[in-house]
Image: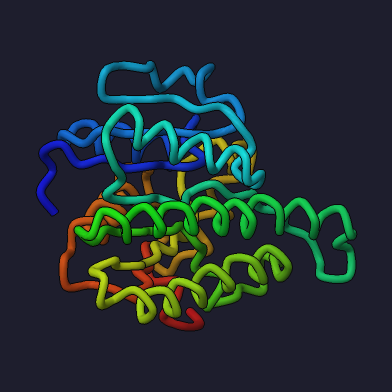
Length: 242
């Protein structure tokens, strides 16, 4: 993908992986529309002529519409979408409540659905293809007994499944759809979790940096012949028991 004057949307952008992805694409010359509930208050991002900040709950259809409208009005179109927004709740399966499920489905699934529909519609109208990359989790395909997260993986597994379906549905239009599936990442989301425990979840005994996840996202965004792929950045956790 040529970087010049390309425009990308990043959800869940106020901190962690999202903020890192925004910074990485700005550094490569992209225009970026970044969104989260309070992205305008992010300590990592400041609005500029190449960065638009849109506050709102991405699980609400009205927020998705505002984000897409901002991209089209400010930058003239949309070339890529990074579905990064997501929440994670770890507990035994029988302890999940109805409110837990509603929260997970709202952010992880509705937060994917509405924005992706509008972006695909815009890409089809532009007739120049595009890219959608979503952030899942290695646990969706490779569960770990040490970390019970079955219900969040119900949503993350859904993202991987729909990405494969959309990759087929829109291949002829040149719209590529891929997924990055991280393991443990050094972000505020895992603040307070013992480092030794996080390292134990990877056979390499490491924790990924935000920059390493951003590199994977950039690769899939720009890899013109890659679609329907799940790229696992997890220190080998998907390989099997160790």
